Image 1 (cartoon, rainbow, N blue to C red):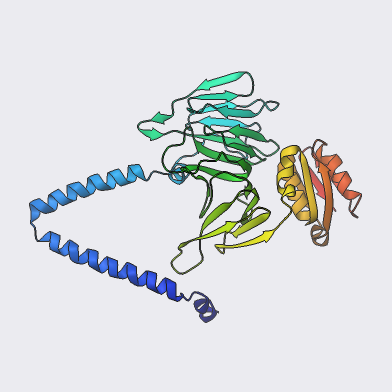
Image 2: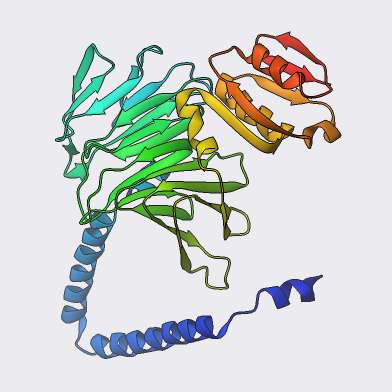
Amino acid sequence: MEKEHFRKEHIDQEEKEHLKQRITSSIFKYRRYKKRIRYGIGAAASIAFIGIIGVNNYSKDSYSIEDYVKTTVANVKSENATEVTLVLDNETNINIDPDNTDIKYSNTGSKVKIGTLQEVDQATVKNNEIVYNTLIVPFGRRSQIELSDGSKVWLNSGSKLVYPVIFKGKNREVYLEGEGIFDVTHNKKQPFIVKAENHEIEVLGTTFNVSNYPDDESISTTLKNGSVQINYKGNSFLGRTKSMKISPGTQAVYTKNANAISARKVDVNKYFSWREGVFIFKSDNLKYIMKRLSRYYNVDIVINDKVLENQTFSGYLDLKEDVENVVKIIRETANFEYTKQNENQIIIN
């Protein structure tokens, strides 16, 4: 088994050349470093001082949205929340009216309009650093947000979006956990990038869906119009970043554990329909369908039959109905019974 595993981990010629260049570069840097030592203690101290300034400047310049996500914990956990919550700079929580969940930023980012009645003022920079906000949408809820650049994002249940109050620098970067539909304002000089772990989607202006739930084995990107480039960590020996461009009507699926990606043509409507309160299924198995319903309604749905889990179904589900009525509609085309244990659990046999 170990020998087989080792054979799979071989490196191709391109990677060998890349590795050779890194080794040669390291030797060259080391030789230069040895020459610098000869200049004496005073010079070395000066170099060390300059080095410290350089490191500090680099750290400050390179502080990214990923750093914020990793080092900062929002005050509200999506799995424990019951209402949509806007977290301002990881300090102030604003609960959003469930009947009026639209959020809109001014083009300066300093004003946030929540629903039709509430408006909040906010600083865009704090301690010379960009201010990030977090929108948390618990299971059973949805929300819509318009960012300061005019881009719109529809967030599905069980999702979290981290974003800067105002976009500065060469890119517009946001971080998504869960599922969102993006309608991005075109800006050729400042590409829009959706970040996830070992994965990012880069666009100029387009409409696409991203699904990145922590408990899913993959991240999917479905393109409706425009074009996107997906940058991801590859499964090679060096773990270098790779890229894939997709065209409209295409879905790219990135497998997290394997660090591998594939693309296929799909009917894009089924990945955007939840925004209109409809689920479209086409030859999808019951396990997948019930997982989608479970998130949407925030109800635990358990299937006690492995054969039934893999049965496929097609059709439209009106999500304005309550979850029990939706399950009844599915039951009409399948041979199963269900019991409602309580308000938050349905057992299918």
